[in-house]
Image (cartoon, rainbow, N blue to C red; front, top):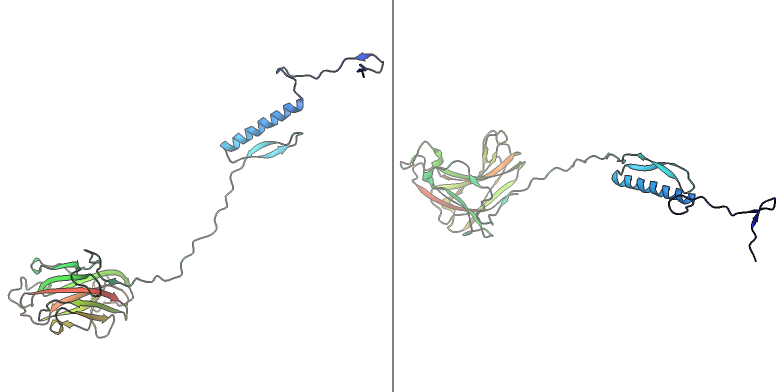
Length: 278
């Protein structure tokens, strides 16, 4: 069927209406142009949000191709923490000192209680030549004299009449606790005794408590281990007036002449092991 030319009301023929176009080389619908603008704006907002994350497109107005939005700067929200650390209600339990001297060259903090004169030739070392139910022990080699012996290097210095060793640990209340050490003397010399002690330095002054029991060398068998102990705070102990059994931070051992002021130069060798507080 042949096409009929358009006619107006008067019956005259009219030419088809041409759509207006942009001078970009093609004809483009105006709606497409709006869509392109919206896409460009959206891309710009996306770029801004990538550069500055606080920008949010939350102010918008309507449009036939979706909403157009103006970005506004909104700082990131953060909720401050309202929780606080909870203090522990548990009372710390002090570690119980125990000394077994298993590691090579490790005396586990034991030391001489005072300076040793050179003439005493005192030595304190870890050894594996002896051990009480273990492979190691603490070896003490020293020399003592009677306070009135003519051969004593310096009669005014009582460090020649005894040798004491000790170990420090964090203070605690050890009232009623038992201090125990095992001792071994290869060849016990006559005229000496061994005694355990504890120290409290609460007043920044060493205050001693000596165990009531003394281990006399004459009662010891050669080449055998023997246990020596004391109870902290026992009424039979000998102690300084300022000693506080609720603030104990040393235990130790002393070797001393047994009252014979004329005792001559006496070498002593003692092995100490398995010292504990229980």
